Length: 193
View (cartoon, rainbow, N blue to C red):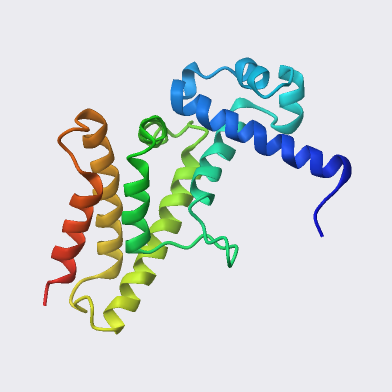
């Protein structure tokens, strides 16, 4: 049964705020993003927006989670990842340069110990490497990938390649085909006897 009443309206407004904020952060970046402007574009006052999200940091972290969750598995309500899914996500990222720019800059800033996004990115990378490692282990058990290669190393290298390709693409979008290059890397890895 679908939620009704004030709760459903609150959830709908929260989703609207997240959609507006995602576009706003992607266009302007975190530092130049204005909570007041996001609130206005969402049809709220700044106080009204802060009723749903206690701070700009909380709103931004929810935007990052939403970005990841949209790539989840809607049938089983899980967020799963694989090498194929990583390549598909990179392919999709080509359509969202603002969001890629935001992700690259915020992931770089997260290395600062005091960064509000540090724990998000640490958890995200732990989760992503774990998901890819599991996929690689399954492929190894089916004989698709050499058992001589360490699944943890391969997972980390695929994530590093995807992130590095995003930066190269942002700098030279006409020269860097992210999905093709990431696919080529995986083909090289999976063809090692």
